[in-house]
Length: 341
Image (cartoon, rainbow, N blue to C red):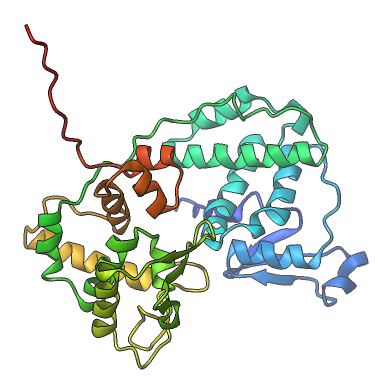
């Protein structure tokens, strides 16, 4: 029988770490065991992100060694825990793999050639791009920590070119799908289209965030606080949501049957996503759409249907260049040139 493959998340761990029976543990040396509750094996947590947070809270990180592996360990302990939880869940499993590729190289010797070799060795282009982004950010901190003076990645390594998503949701197909949508989706979509805000920000709206002055919403990604004026369209969207979602059992405008918020402590929205996916499958089965669309495509629809590019950028709270590249998907209607031959 062939040996069981090891999960990549369980390899390349920091020194004296181990994965045992579904959890991560740290084995402190005898001289510092008193700092770890006198335990031979100290339990850090079930997930890698939790383990790094617990470990960082217990130790005072000393100056790292000269290798990229040591740099990445310090980066995982000091920098990653300050990022959004979903970002932590994405980045932490990739750090051991980065150490496998680049960990043996001294920080001062790391070059763009090494990073390109790693990028070419990874089958998934999106995964490769994420790993380049991580090592690039870690090198920025290497300069900050005095480990080297120049940046070996920024401006020197070109990541895989991945085309932007182009799916534009037509109003007619959205109306057809809306007719068979469950209450949660019928409550959610009008608010989404009015604001163009991100999913987590909308799902965190509380009833007292809606006043006569406007709807107050904090963007989950940027932390930007917005106040949308309660015009006729947004007022109707909010009232529609309150009608479809019983408002007397929870403080949230959108909530589960038990009155809980759809955004969990780890920033994931699995409950909402399941409802969305079942609805999309039903739309496909009934041939209401030829191609499924994502919740995020509605953000692009709001931008594409806006009066101007500037207005789209204002609504989405993104830079104009980002809006043009990722969110303006509706084909433009152009007047042909008159050559006057």
